[in-house]
Amino acid sequence: MQINRITLDPGVMGGKPCVRGLRVTVGMILGLLASGYSRERVLQAYPYLEPEDIDAALAYAAWRMEEREEPLVAP
Image (cartoon, rainbow, N blue to C red):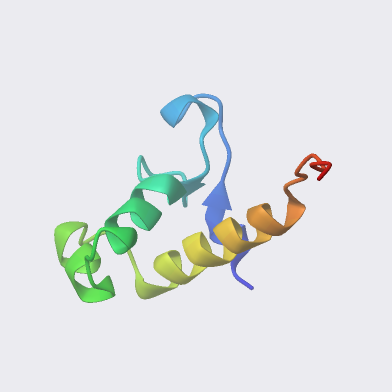
């Protein structure tokens, strides 16, 4: 897993998880992919990103979702 490409810095994008300290958030990458952008189109739109950055964003999001606690709902 390449989560080491994801950085958290209060001085960059308000501390949101970003790719390699750039002003590209994990949420932005996920949003683009969710809206139908292909990986290739994301990389064309942001030429300073690398394919591994997209992999890292997806891995980080998956990891965070597994760590998320949901309150139990009684029937």
